[in-house]
Image 1 (cartoon, rainbow, N blue to C red):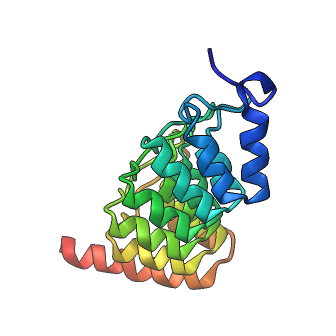
Image 2: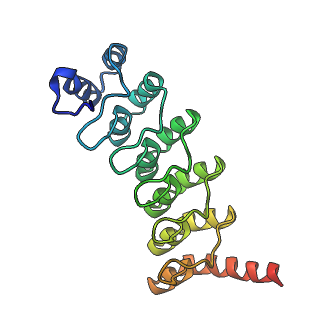
Length: 207
């Protein structure tokens, strides 16, 4: 039986309250008495997901140690790493990667943590994920890459990091749009310049 936040009998309200209050010592004691992996809220989020969302690094570390398993997905197939990457929580991303979180885990949209960080413009997280060998050319269900997402929003630092890591700059999505198409159409001049160099470099290597 999956526990939910409404199931007070299983102590979920107490654990949630301890997490929200930031009472780390009390949370650690409470976790020792329950099955932390079984704890889930109505959206399938584990305590680790909740700690990530509430940006509590100390609690996150305690929960990682208590759970052992860091890749449990929620109802949208998002892992804690995916949520941390999307929110730009660099310290928490670092903790999860140190605990061997799956760097290329996919959610229901087939998006990876790198794609989520790229879409949100978190250059520091993108660099960290690249360092841990995240797939810079992974595509989601629309055949879009992290580079396309970053280009569409004008996140030039992310675009630059992805290009340097070997992201393919000329592949199209399902509609035929490339990263350059997005950048040009939305007027992101800095991104266009980076991608232009990438395209020229690719053409030179091909020749």
